Amino acid sequence: MPYDPSDFPPFAVTVDLVVLTVRRHALCALTVRRGEEPYQGQWALPGGFVRAEEDLATAAARELAEETGLHTQESGDSHAAAHLEQLATYGDPHRDPRMRVVSVAYLVLAPDLPAPTPGGDAGGARWTPVARLLGDAVEAAERLAFDHARILADGVERARSKIEYSSLAAAFCPAEFTVGELRRVYEAVWGVALDPRNFHRKVTGTPGFLVPVGGTTTRQGGRPAQLFRAGGASALNPPMLRPEV
Image 1 (tube, rainbow, N blue to C red):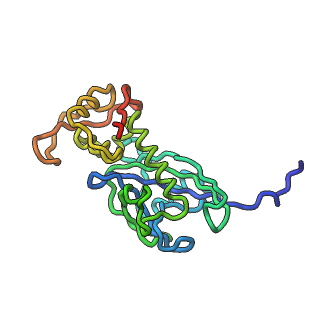
Image 2: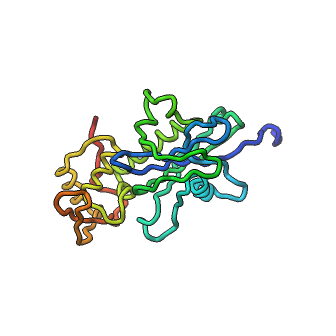
Image 3: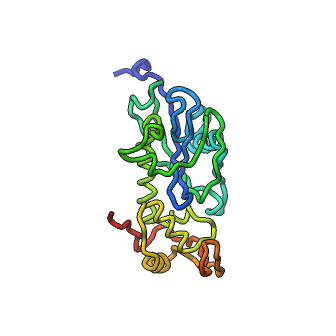
């Protein structure tokens, strides 16, 4: 049948950002307080509308900078840049009360990031432990706007799954880190306690995962601990499987 433009009402495309970091041994997500309707005053994931001249990744980087003051960096050093990957697309016809909006979500992972600075149309920005934002017992003041709780849950599950089979956990660590610091990343992301000796044996015995840098540190207290950097392996063999809880 012939094409009729009136059969396809206009709609918008947005980007939403699931930005995760580990702060004080807890997996935290970046949230912003909405400064305008809909859901004015409610917490949400950072994001916004894609401009006509932008590709999706450019829009994601711009929204992150405008709403929080944080930046992704383009660099040949994998430790200088936050890990950024496309997560999923969300297109429920009723997900936004303003109009039909399709959102492309991005997952951002980085080491302990600084306190965010709100900007743009954000009325505030903060790091919030994901345990306070997800689940059946979330307080009313913590409930995320739109379908952002679902997007956040998908992003957290992606992170939890990826650190089983890839070296992505190192994206939460500084350029040089100890096995204990890496273990605390796994514990924070998975939400479980791990046996230190068993964990040390697994990660140091996984080919290409960790490379000794020849130094030690006492920044975690106690005896000097050996420093490592991420190796060249992108896939872990054998994988670091999550304990059953």
